[in-house]
Amino acid sequence: MASRYGTRKTFGPVVLAGLAGAGLTAVASNQRWASAQPTDDTVAYTELAVGAQAPLAFTLSLVVLAAWGVLLVTRGQVRRVVAVLASIAALGAAATVVAGRWLIPAGYRDDFREMGTTPVVDFHAWYWVAGVGAVLTVVTTVLAVRLVGGWPEMGSRYDAPGESSPAAEPEVLEDRSSLDLWKAMDEGRDPTT
Image (tube, rainbow, N blue to C red; front, side):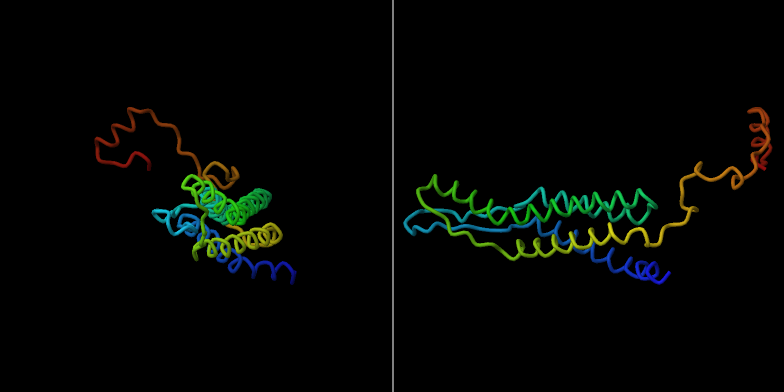
């Protein structure tokens, strides 16, 4: 019982940290991560800067954010499956951020090769923010996979209609003809009573 209570206590902090990490990664992945300047001062250039460096990291971060929402409203095995899917998306976002460290300079080298020079690439703070957010997202989704079984669940009263047991359904009113319903409305009475 104590271990189950311990996992219940992790629910709020892990979910909040997961939402913060995925949100941070999404915001940072939609910003400019790097800019480049030529090493040759004689080359006329406009500073090359790329915004939205990692659309894949941005998209996967949104998937993780959606998964956190689903984790809040589901129960049982569905919840664990969603946690696993969130972990896979988080790992993909983190891999995209790490790969950006090599792919972005390679892209700049190709662009600058056409101008006959080589670039000096500077990574901006947003790249590092995306990295921190991605690590936080991976850690929290992996924790969710491990701990989700002991987390509190929404009650069955929030289930969609039709999923309740027959004993819990209200009594069905006796059938009335359409004519009786219209007559009751014409007379100013509520036909459902």
